[in-house]
Image 1 (tube, helix red, strand yellow):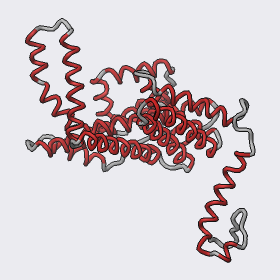
Image 2 (cartoon, rainbow, N blue to C red; image 1 turned 90 degrees about the vertical axis):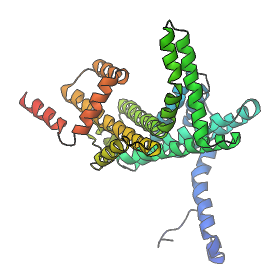
Image 3 (cartoon, rainbow, N blue to C red; image 1 turned 120 degrees about the vertical axis):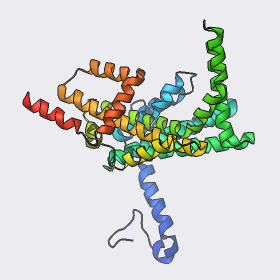
Image 4 (cartoon, rainbow, N blue to C red; image 1 turned 180 degrees about the horizontal axis):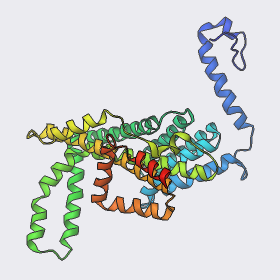
Amino acid sequence: MPVGFIPVGWTGRHLIYPQAETFFSIIDVFSAQVIPLANTNLLSSNSPFFKLLLIITFFSAASLIPFIGLLFLMTLPMVLFILYLLNDQTKTLLAFLVVLCAMAIVLSSIHSIIPVFALTVMGLAGMVMARTTQKNYSIEIITILPSLILLGAIGFYVFYSASQLSISPIQLIEKYFTQAVELNIQFYSRMPLKPEELKAIQDSKPAVIQIFTGISPALCIIAVLFTVWMNTLMGNRMLNKVGVVLPQISALCKWRAPGWLVWLFIAGGSLSLLAQTNIRFWGLNVFLVASFIYLLQGLAIVSFFFQHKNIPFFFRWLSYFLIAIQQILMIAIAVMGLFDIWIDFRKYFRKDQTTT
């Protein structure tokens, strides 16, 4: 224990039972955090805690709605990110735990509690985003730590589900993509296609399933990184509207991928050209993840251009929408992010602004 440090509620018990010192210190810290909450009227309609309960309950319950619920679930990290930064951390965590316990009780009687597991992981990711932001960590840490939590949860769910069905995780993933491809074939069969076109789609079914199963790790990593990245950007934008500035996120338009990533990009692209299937898919996974990171760098360059040219927000969002739906634009932005290693595009934007 540091010299001069006296825990709250310290008594002679620490001298009589030295081995219990750590235990009693934990109890004292916990009491110092929770007792003040118990002395306030948390469930009053004017209580900040009550408002936290309402907001978290709304987004958690909305996440259970079919189809549209996925949108609420994907934005839950942003909600906890904002609430954690704007409110007392202990109250935010307590409100989230209360909602989870209530939903677990309700769903255990009528449904599986797996949705509670998903809510827990997404909410935890949001609070980790907020905590790392408070600690002034870099944007890489703010993104990677929540992503590792989500990836760990996905991995646990895949292995658990596979064990329940007595199959391997790869077989489970292949089963999922088989069902998805079959649904798409059924959809195309209802369209006015020529018989030879429909037959070509059906004949390509095994190859499509093999490809998507092989690149499933990259798809999973990209989806998680995109989710965390977007929640961070949206949360930062909403916090800016209430006067909260997060420097490491606000300067995201200046972000660059690490220099060593180009070697992974080259190695992944080279391995993806080999004939051996397993090695080819491992290389393709590395190549896809590296390409996505360069896409993020390209988007940072685009954002830098928009900010320095004071482009109206309507045209900014329109441009991002076109990039999202046009693959050729997405590839062009990723290539720009890659070549930014050698060509500092932002430097030319600064020069252009200086001359004008």
